Length: 221
Image 1 (cartoon, one colour):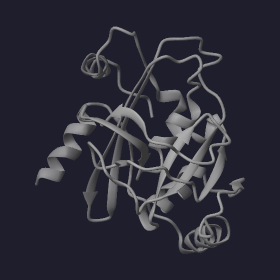
Image 2 (spheres, rainbow, N blue to C red):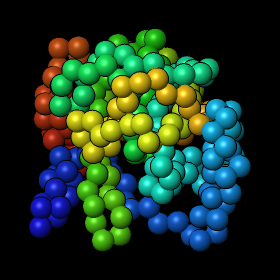
Image 3 (cartoon, rainbow, N blue to C red):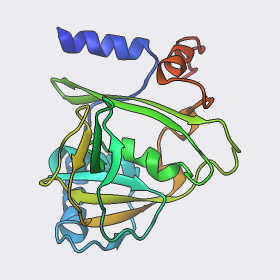
Image 4 (cartoon, rainbow, N blue to C red):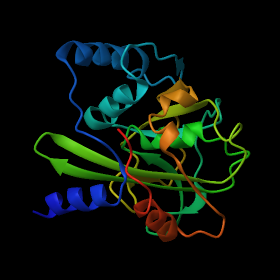
């Protein structure tokens, strides 16, 4: 009952959503082959994703079926992730490496040009269902130059073993240095909600921007 209420509430808020991952068997076989060839060895090499299915399907498959977490960045050559002082989603301070067990959330961080966008607001919420996980998202950037606010980036695939869950389910943290198993080049168009990112001012709280979302007209799709 609680999960059904969550599904209704998140839908009411107007969050972006994706349904449970449902892949044809032949795609699963192909994704397994990609994992074995480019990620399982853990040598940190760059992999150029070339597959008919959008990249986020492969990333979702990895996070749901493999012991990995993901980190999105504009930087293409991170050899080792070092813990940095920050705070969990629940605002508890921590010095750690951050990653996610969701396949779409890190694409936001890989695609937003952090050299020109000073502030991000975002959330990833997942609800278990009989078919898997229904996922909900909210993305917002501080108003800036629209032509430069997105860029290409990199998704780093990290081993899940040294991480522990953070402030919410899909936030994971590690308080020691971590080397990536592999990395994947990301084009800004790989982020499936590129046209659905909201805008906020530097004085807007997260709650205020979500309230604004309730007043937006329904999407015509």
